[in-house]
Amino acid sequence: MDRRSLIKNAGIAGVLAAGMAPAVHAQAAVRWRLATSFPKALETLHGAAVKFSETVKALSGGKFEVSVHAAGELVPAFGIVDALADDSIEMGETAAYYYTGKDPAFAFGCAVPFGFTPQQIQAWKLYGNGHKLMDELYGKYNFFGLSALNTGTQMGGWYRKEMKSVADFKGLKMRLGGGVFGESMAKLGVVAQNMPGGDVYQALEKGTLDAAEFVGPYDDEKLGWNKVAKYYYYGAWWEGGADLEFFINKKAFAKLSPENQAIVHAAASVAYTDGTSKYLMLNPIALKKLVAGGTQLKRFDKAIVQAGFKAAQEVYAEHSAKDAFFKKVFQDMRTFQRDQILWNRISELAYTQDIAGLKL
Image (cartoon, rainbow, N blue to C red; front, side, top):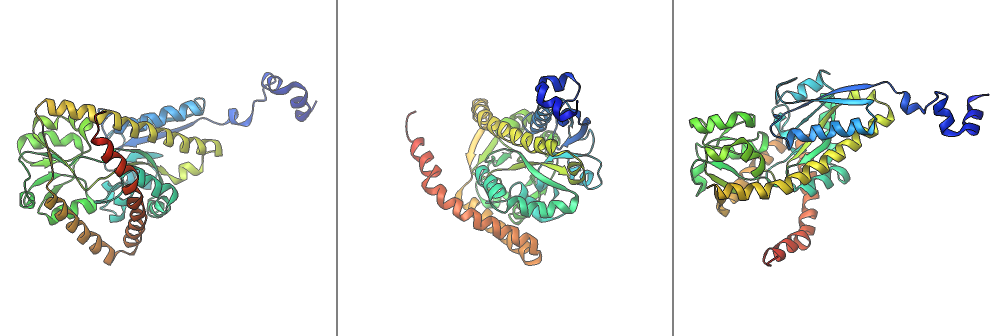
C-alpha cells in the first residue's frame, strides 16, 4: 500500500501509528540564544525575553528552544548589536537608542524627544513606514526588529535637588539615554552619563551623579533610587512611549522553517502584549507606594518643557542637515505623528480629561 492510500484508508491515527507523522513533527530541534540588556532583577524588561522563550517552546512543542541570558552573561548590556553583526548570538532584547553612537537614527526605533506614544509607535511600525525604515538601518548590522514591549510614557527621573527652572539643569550630572535625547539635554547644560541602570544607585549615593532617569515607578523602585534621590519628576518629554525590541539575526532567521519563522513573530506579539500590559498594572501601584514612603512627586515647569522642545528641534535640524537617512525617518515620523495627534485630541485625550474630573 502506498503512502497516499494509507492516509486515505487509515486516517491521521493510522498515519501516526505507522510512524509517518506530519512533517512539522519531524523537524530538527532548534536552539537559539537571546541576550538582553537588562538584569534578571528587572523582571518587566528582562521578562519580555523570558515570555518570548516560553511561548516559542510551547508553540513548537519543545522543538524550538531559546535560552535567555541577562546583561553581561553572553555579551555586555550595550553589546547586542555587535554580537548580532558578527553572528555571535541569534537574537537580543534591547533599546535601539543605546546604539546611537553607531548611527543617530537608531533612536527612532525606541523613543525620541517629543515623539510617539506607545499606541502611535506601534501604528507607525506596523501600518506606517516604521518597520521598513528601521529595518533598512538594522539590516546594515545583520538583524531586523520586532517590538518586545513598550514601557509606556516614562517619568522625568530622580533628582537630589528641586528643578525649578531651566538654569537648574546647567552642570547637572545625569544618567540618561543617549542619542537625540542626550544631545538635546546637553544643550540645556546637562552633563549626560549613559550607564546601565544597575550602576546608578551607587553613583547617586556618592554624589558622582546628581540625577538619573530610567523607566517608571515600578522599575525605579526596584532599583532603589528613591533612597538616594527624593525628588521624582513627571511631565518628561523624552520618552512618550519607549518601544523595546527583539533584534533578530537575519542569517539565523533565514535558516528557520516557515513554521518556526511564524512562531518567532507570534511569540514576539505575545511578549509585547504581556509586557506592555504589565507596566500599566504595576506602575500606579508602585507610584502610590513611593509617595507614601516620602518621595516628592513634582511636575516640570512649562518653561522647562518649552526649553527642552527648542533644544530637541535644534538637534533634529543638525542631524537632518548632515544625514539624509536621519532626515527621511524624522520627517516620516512627524508626518505620521501629526495625524495621530489630531485624532488623539478628539478621542483619547478628550475622554481621559473628562473622566479624570469624575468621582469613579
